[in-house]
Structure formats: C-alpha cells, structure tokens
Image (cartoon, rainbow, N blue to C red; front, side, top):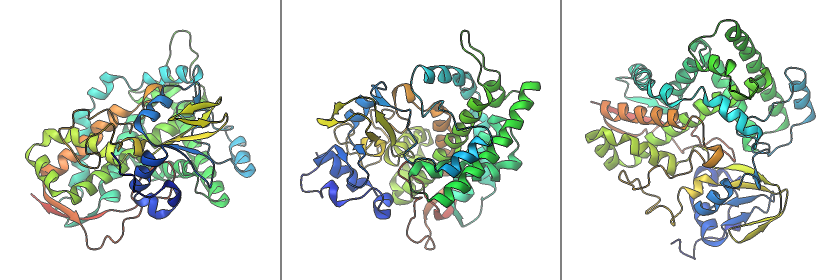
Length: 414
C-alpha cells in the first residue's frame, strides 16, 4: 500500500513542468489520499485508481466522451478557419458516444482486421531494419528523431497509402493536431494549428477522391469504400476526422512509447541483458513500457448526470480525467508497479489503450511496432546509455500525452 505520509495532492499541480516530467509522486498521492481528486485551478476531477477508471470506462452513458478532447473552447477565429474549409471537425471515434460511435467503430474496424495486422509483421520488421540501417555504426543518436519518429511515420504513411515523401508534412500536421489536446496552447498558436489542420484536410480530401475513383490495397481505400448493411458510408467530413485520429494515434503515441522504452533500457541494464539473451520477451517488455510510461496519460469525460465514483460525488456536467498513467501504477492492481517485470502475470491488463468501447482501434498494430522496434534494437546492440550531451530530460507540455522532446544516447554496436 502507498504510505500515508506521502505529500497531499494539493501540494502538486498537473501543469507544473516538474510534475509533467515525473508525475508519479502526484499519482501516488492521489491514490493514497484522494483517489477522485478535484483540481483547484480548473475544477476538473482526476480519477487515479485502476478500479475507478474501469468503472467509468464501463459507463459511457454517464461518463460521456462527446467532449473527450475539447478541454479548451475553440476561439472564434479558429472556428471560422474550419468553417471556411470543411466545416467543424465532427465527432467520430475518440470524442463520440453510442449509438453514433458504434457506427463509426464498425466501419473503421474494416480497415483494422486481425488478418490485415497479422500479415503486416514481416513488413513492420522490414521498416524497423531499414530505419536501423540509417543509424548503424553511429556512436550516438537522438532516439526520438532518428528511430522512434521514422518507424511509425513510415508505417502509417504506407498503410494509408500515401507517399513517404510527404512524411515531414505528416509529422507537422500530427503535432499540430495534438497541441490543442493538452490544454496548454495560446490563442496565436491555436490559429496557426488550425491552418495546419486545414492544410492536412485538403491533402487528404484529394487522396480520398483518388480512392473513390481508383481504390488500392490500403487503409484509406478500405475507409473510403467501407460498406456495412444498414449503415451509410463515411462522408468526407467523417473521413477527414477518422484519418486525422489515425494519423495521430498511428505515430505520436507509438513514437513516445518507443522513446520511453529506450530510456527504460538506459536506466535498467539488467533488463537490457535479459532481453538481449531472450528477445522473445520483447512482447512482454512492450506491455511494461505501455504500463509504466503510458503514452496517453489520461483522457477526459463529461458527466451526463450527477454520479458517485470512488466515494466522491461528481456533479452533472463535470469534466473528469481518467488518469491511465496513474491507474497503470496502482498498487492494488499491479505488484511492484514501478518495476519492470517481464514475467508479470497480467501483462495486458493495463489501460494504456483504455478499455471498453473506446479501446484503441490500432492497439494490436501499435503493440507489434513497439515489440519489433525493441527486439531489433536489443539484438543489434551490446549496450545503450544516456549521452553526456543529453542534459535534463524534457517532455512536451500537455495534460494528455507523455512524450520526450529528445533522447540522446550512446550505442555499443554488436
């Protein structure tokens, strides 16, 4: 159990850069003293325990996702930018509730079948190998820029069926899509971000029209031509919303997890040695990275009625942050939660991909990318450690995601 002498939640702030760099003392404090904690600055509630997060995830009719990412009101200038292009961004997957969510989930599932993901394994290995070849022999790299970004970016570009030559633009668009989600962006930047998102929409609107005329063997064609009995096909606005979410989920979170995995190896040479001796354990290691350094630290819900969660009364219309990063280190669920345990008996029970109707649709693809990225790396290296040039670790400021800006490491090649 968490000792009662840890600091009180009121002694922390989620927007404090030091807390964002290492939020785990704050999470432990909430779990120990106030597991459904109301932030004094903003008034929203943070759910820190695994059991309470699971309860909320199982009640989408009370804990609505309809406002899941909209913790900031769009400035009027931003609304006008979207309305002048393709209209406001519609709620489809992450920011939606049944029955509308059910329709989108069914249609998008046609692009993420188990058969499609299974046949991707050799291709994922090829992408990882070719990415590693670009850095082989170099004594020092920035893991984020040189390894963790290119792998998922190449894969999502290939799977959507668009040119890798446009990957730099995809990264800019993806970063722009993420920035407003964290609630820490000023108005001027919000306007810049909106213009970038519209630029992305125009690009994909052209690709969508191409697929209508000439379908290919890619996810974009699957989405454009998805048909289910009794359901209308996805229209342009809906397709643009889904594609934006796939672009973000397909690279931002996977990039952050791969980077976090290498950092964990730098800090734990024993785990590196175990994985190098038994690369087949990299699947379990991938689950431990996801649990320990959850790339999505928490997502918001909005209550549709007054309710009680974790013994705390929550009013109707309250914003509630389900803090997966804390739930995944809950002592009541995971033995020695701060440790890497490659033989953990419940390796996939973490909430890095959420649970219930909003379980991440690309979870199996992400798992495989992370596993292969770790396996190839540990088999090609004798050791990895933080570079003396790294300096203090910096994370992007956001209430939602957890991602390193840079990770400079020194490599000992096998």
